[in-house]
Image 1 (cartoon, rainbow, N blue to C red):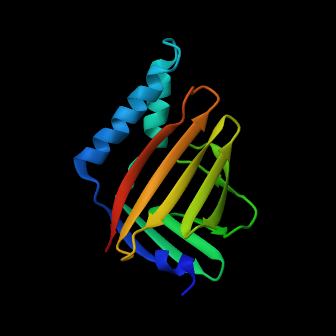
Image 2 (cartoon, rainbow, N blue to C red):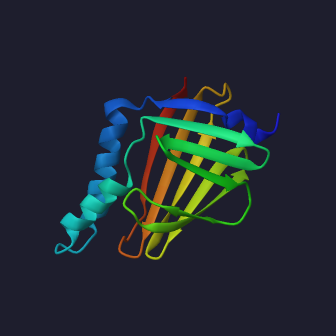
Amino acid sequence: MPAEQRFVGTFKFVGGDAQRQNLETAIEAAAMELNALIRGIGRKRLRDANPIREQVTIAVDGDKVSMTSVVGRTLVHRIDGPAVPWTSDSGKAVQVSVSLVKGRLVQTYTADDGGRRNTWTLDESGDRLTLSVTVTSDRLTNPLKYALSYRRN
């Protein structure tokens, strides 16, 4: 089976309150790096841009990967293909590409003022999916990093 086929399925968030708190702590640490005048706005933007998706569905058709985490919003891209235009939840225009690196699906989002890398990793059983996120911005001294856990339905 091709490595990308292992990701096919629907996964539910199982990180619970601990991962929710870890994300909030990471956002707060990133916000504290910002100038005090824009800290509140930055904190809100980071929260809005990093929601925890309760469910993620991944489909693979040949070299195309489809990811749905919000009803009606499915992102389709070609593995190692060119970046595709996408509109973030906040309405911002971004470019998104996906690659398969050492058995992991890696999504790269690029915007005018920063970017995001989602690394999707399956455990050996294929039942536990981990999303590791790195967010960069011209305004952040250090990237925002966090991880979320999902289990196959």
